[in-house]
Length: 503
Image (cartoon, rainbow, N blue to C red; front, side, top):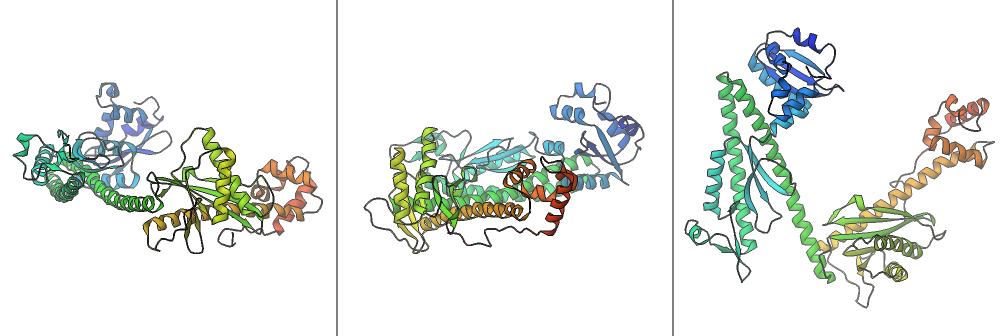
């Protein structure tokens, strides 16, 4: 019996019936960690708690499961087939930790294709760990899988794990040595582009094979259940479930690859039009937001490979002046951002985009000069005609409305605008909520600050009871009653970015 098992677990195990059913193992927090089926609940569940069983088991996951069991529930059913079906439904419902581990166990093979490689190969693995790779499987019949890969090599001229391609002087690749060249029907020397077309075709073939095997496994599972071989049927059911999950992930993978290809095309087009020395895989964009010169803030958003990288977003409150001056605000935040990157010896983005025209980009350039940092490629995007402005003598550039590079810049600029407006709205909403205290008679600035410091926010202050208000420094019983009555009579609304126009 596990050392951390509940007091009544022994009694529960002893009282189990000699009947079919499903058992649900739980940990100390009451979470279901494993679901199993049994022809006899009493015999099956008792086997987990035989003296010394955990120490003699060779599989670490099963030992860990036994050590974690604290409690259990059981569900009796009429027959073992019914237990098998119920077990599958409960696993899908609860997704217990140890059932997932067993389903993804290293018993079954996967086919991995790493598209980050220049010449992707079809390799066998038992672990799914690289999100950039595409996986097929798991496959219960390793012999059939290996024959299929050999067939694919002959049919499509692709590389398996044992391939040793050689780079030729003309930039092409020789996939196989002279002996193997006689075996395969496809041309041996290929360009990277030609080889990747073969890989795409082979992936389509393997995807079709996967769906064929899925139907075959379903038929095999039904036959095993009909023969009352429920252990085999349950094993096949787990493989089918994992294989269905792979097919769903494959669809998502293909959507992601399509999006990445589209983004990469936009980045290449942008590099060409702006004559950038490197592909702008890292871009940052700045925007200033204010309402008639008040609540002046700035945003900076970062795109990596054409997609928002929100961990690198930054927002700024203007510190160097009070009032409405977009140029000074832009100079301040650009200087603060890149002075810090330089001091921390962090890489600069390949492209900096300023939301605005000649004045805004001039302010950004002035910031780089002031901090003594060589600016990366720098452009402005003027809203009126979506004109690209350069900081040097180059004339403004207008790209077609459907140009993929311009569309990417627009997404970047719009995201910076959204992020700045949201921050501005948050600050204004907070200020409006806090200003309600100005309407409460007898509450001076010091006591107002003390209340906000004590409760942390106006929302927590409004929700406080009379007793909680009375416990705050400088607030007595009488004052707390009046304050509670005051809040009850007030309706405070928040202002959001959707309700206000910002510049």
